[in-house]
Image 1 (tube, rainbow, N blue to C red):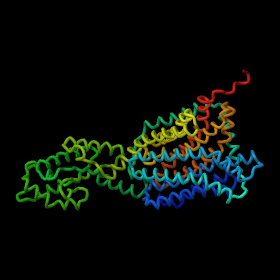
Image 2: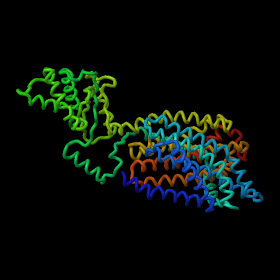
Image 3: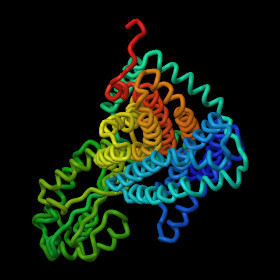
Image 4: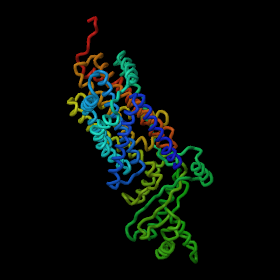
Length: 551
């Protein structure tokens, strides 16, 4: 894992920045404007890092990725503004630089504010995740987006005016490509919408095949020395994983023959489970002491004299302490046993944990008196619990985002209309991943929150442009609106989509999964924004569609 993350940090992440720079340079045709755009994004990251440092924030692995997310949305907002500058420069050639910049930022202030606000809500939904690292990432991004919004609206115009001089945005190439896409949509608005929607639903059906497997070993390739060593252990010893079982007692209740007999009966029941190859517990040490008595004790634990049992336990508890997980607590109110397992998936580990806890409950260890724990159990439940929690958080975020869109755009119809293109792309990307790989890990549990800002940003700009052109609700009118706004959508999609796609070449499996899911979500969202959203807008809102000439 260290080698994989080192490769990402030294090569892959810098290469991602290079790809972003190349895509923006192609889109804007101006080196200074491209540098100012990326510079603003980098500055937003530095401000967030500084605030986090002053607040004493401790960075975990998940929280570190928040900086790339903040930079992503900062750059995405500026992309739309700069394309608006380019359009105004062509249409109003008599205007000077400063009025063009100010007018463009003023025109897109509402969608920029709305995009940052809705994205902050999306990341705050990570507080529904059970993992503290994900909660920290969500809060850090939400705070960072406040500074990002300040930079976009107040600092970026100054940078463009002072650093870039009398610049010209040469985005003709992106506009020609955008016209190709919008003309394709105009040939069959509803047919394209039905096609893309149907394919998305087919992708979503893949979720029925989902299995959650976050076993740590799966993050390494088959030929990795760690996997080879674990395989060697499994072949020679018959097990390669451990799970801890902790049993809790009232004060003084453990050191009785009846309780030790109950402990032995429970251990035998656990050993009868097919996945369990052995149990390391304190009983062998106790039996060893009883066997070395003079004369050796030959009865059952239920009949052993209590004084003899107390002597064997109290005089040898430090021996079990030296054996690691197989130990008594110092106050003899807890017993910890280590279950030896063969290699199995997270789903099997979760099922085994539930079976063991059920056996313990049947033996009288109810409530919090029995707990199955350990790294393997935590890993097995991580993505499963987080994904379930994130569904609740994403649902709440979607409700709040829809309300914000309705308030800012003054249309509850647009608020309802935004739900499908904002939420379905991430779900479709998950389904697409499952069709190919069936297993979902840690990256999938936060993919909705991570891609939320990118997806919502483009959707908001399209809806805002359509709202400003309400008198153009015909097919042709909508096409003209799309031709004006789609260069920004196309640039955002290509820059961020291909940038995140590079993570699929990561040496770390979590980053590979994150790269695929993020890139797939961005590209699917582009198809929704182009082929589904305009058709839905015309059908539900555009009531005065142009009739055919024959009529």
